Image (cartoon, rainbow, N blue to C red; front, side, top):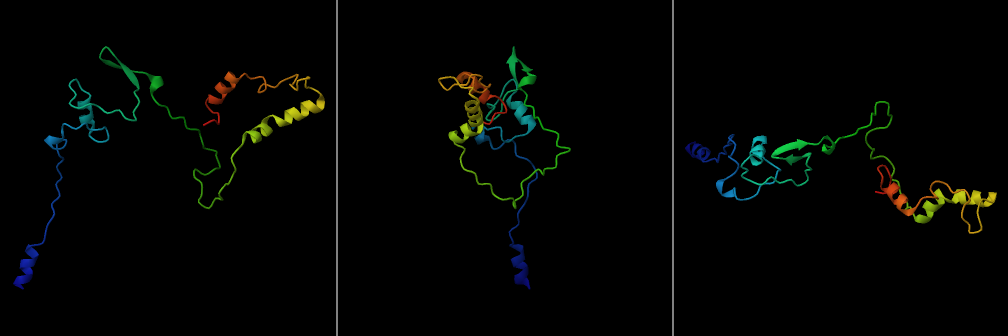
Amino acid sequence: MSKISNLIDFVVKRNISLSAPREGKRNFRKFVVANKRGSRLFKERQSGPNPELEVDKRGVRDTGYMLNGRYVKVPEMIPELIVPDLKDCNLKPYVSYKAEDVIQSEFTPEQLFDAVYSKKIVTDYKQGKLNADGQPIEPSEEESLQPEEAIQRAKRTGSDIF
């Protein structure tokens, strides 16, 4: 019985410390700490009048600018999330894994031309609305665009270019 009690005394015990360390060990202060960790007070102290460390701004955009030592917020620079009202929407907010895979070939320039212009060209030809060069007498809005204007329309918000 005494051998068993001696074995129990030698069981390794682990201790858990609930106190927080002071911003790491002293020999690690020379390393620049990215803004991934740290309390709000630590980050405020970094950007205070005498910052101990450089504030890392990777992936963070400014919402204003400094003017005479004062930070001026610009409302247009603050990101705004525009979420549509889906109250009466019958669609589910996810795609089921049971849904069939959609396999679609690459959309070629020829298919794009056929989808947009071919019907109008055929109707203009049948109705005799083409001049001697084959150009339409009454061009539609898309046909009368200049290349620069077409590029700007393609880059507008809501276009499918990206």
